[in-house]
Image (cartoon, rainbow, N blue to C red; front, side):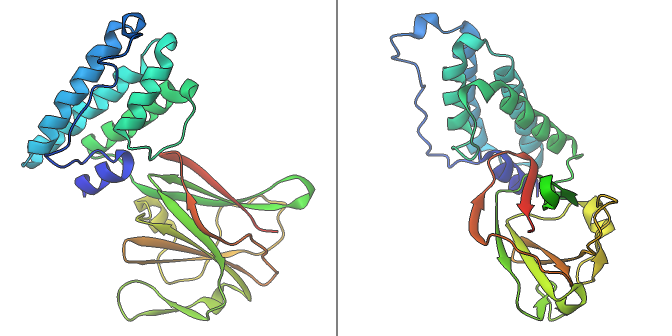
Length: 260
């Protein structure tokens, strides 16, 4: 599980044959880069060599902690080198996350905290919470808080039943209401806290809604093939913009989906 999480959050599991090229070894501006950056760059290259040779669980834990410290060091970098730090962080994460150069230090700190929680065994990875809020002019918004979600899709659900998981058990989604929308998260699970609130294959009342929202929303959860499906239903029409693939650019945050 730890190996999977490490790949999901930072994409750093590499083959032993990976060729590492130091980004600024021939850069004419190297003399203006602070020494801390050059040291981090060298340490990252050394880290990759160690990662390719790790074979035991203890090796993995040690490398996870070391990687978190590397990210913490990036988060403490000097602002005049933010372009170089941003380039290095994009290489480290294989471009999995989108951020501006001036966001590099906050992004590195966010990743470091998540990786350290993973090393300590306290990271409750996956979808954390579902809530419904209201924007201006009465527009309702489905907000999904997550840690480590990579991508999702949105579509209107016309089927009357779905599989709860890889078993043969069916979930009659008509219990959720006449109108239903399915949000499918790729390679993402539900956090333990979320599972405690919403057991799979059962229609639940949405627990987190503003008091002045009068629409009755229900929610159902299924999971198949390393994916998590959140089904939102109501007897009132739900109008969403269907999307086949939406990339999640932050390792931790909230996803907002307009419902009307």
